Image 1: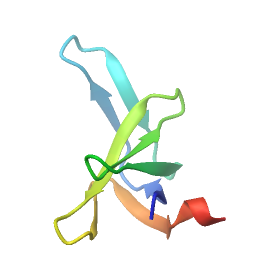
Image 2: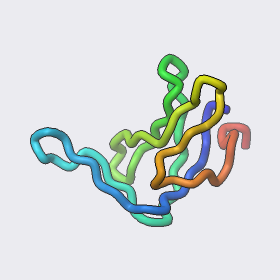
Image 3: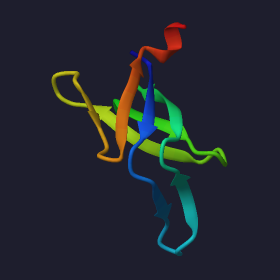
Length: 79
């Protein structure tokens, strides 16, 4: 499963140390997240193309999503 589709159930913003907005996802927004195999982490792009962390694979290869996302579809890359 190299891609997953998730939906945002809790909107959020991410800021860097300089208090600049570096990521934003709105409620009910659907994102396609890609797996970075080296780190086993999933990242998606927000509406402005900024990378947003979605979740990761645990030690058993099971998907662990951030609390603000719910899984819509596994294997989104197989369509």
